[in-house]
Amino acid sequence: MADTTIPAVSPALDTPPVPSLVDGAPEGSTGRLTRGGFLRRAGVGAGSVLVAGSGVVSYRAYDQGAFQVGQGPAYDPWRTWMDGTGLERLVAAALLAPSPHNTQAWMFHLTDDRQVDIYLDPSRSIGAIDPFGRELHIGLGAALENLDLAGQADGHQPQLTLMPSGSSSPHAARVDLTPGQRLPTALYRAIPNRHTNRYAYQDRAIPAGALHQISSLAGGLTDTGLQWFTSPSDRARIGRSLVSATEAIVGDQAQSQSDYDWFRQDWDTIQARRDGITIDASGLSDLVAAAAKILPAQSRQATDDAWLSATRDVHTKTAAAYGIVTVRDATDNAQRITGGRLFERAHLWAAANGLAFQPMNQLTERADRERELGLSPTFGETLTELTGSDRQALVTFRLGYPTHTAHLSPRRPVEWVVQR
Image (cartoon, rainbow, N blue to C red):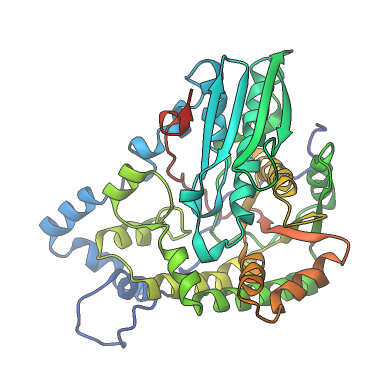
């Protein structure tokens, strides 16, 4: 891959004010302070909350891992992914791929050190958020891309077969491995540095040459491409649509609950399950995130309000560019997997070149929900207007220069997802 011409990233800026999280209690209420209430008033009372009642708070801080960001067995795969041998080493790389809501809906079957089969684990679906499995297959494609990169780096020539047992089978891909030259690429080396960044991004344009290099990563992937939206008017238009889609999701009880089911707020739960979205990965300042872990858990309403506020006031306001991975048929599982491979390539390239990256799937999530319920295709039509009638949107993301380093997300270990 050609060397990047992207300018060096400037030093990280101060993290902007955290969006309000509303817990439903009125201002001035004397009721119990919840995470939502604290976060709503974080700019005023954070210090006093942290020092008051030091014995109780200190215990809660320890018990909830308030200051142990990225520590414990749930995060070890990020540090040990190259320690294994054989095919399990390739799987370890695959496990660091992104997946919707960090569900990690994959299983791997290893055969005689020459073949890896990847299966969808339907028990890890996100329900009404992803009614047709679009996002689960994108996640499988991202894992497949990491496995392919790791295979080449370890001296294999991977031969990939998508949906080998049919388009509706959980058997997503088969990877046959033959000896080859070791090719550790820049994308491979970026695997442990790729993290979803939900913080604000700098007010700084991305050079057209960088976007062109990311688009070129679609080479060799059939029926898959990238569309970019960088002008102020395009970004404002997409931003408004994303906010409207988020409002629709939090207003849909089934989608709201499906989203909340994968939010992990308890330290012990994170270490036990090693999946889901965490407070540390939510884009909050370090102080507010630590306090949020000490206080009682947020309600579903509070997390919905926080997400909507962050989407409206941070994510869409600071995106330097939006990208949409497009395919010919977004209902085809093989094309979803291929699109997931391109999505992961783009994310890895961003990580290797100092850019922040965040998937923003609200438009496609609402479009699929409209189709499931037979509703008027409001968001489906928005996507068609953006991509044109000959291409279909698979996944949307925002890109920019970071103001803050993204934290690790939990990962299940190899032994939990491998069968022989």
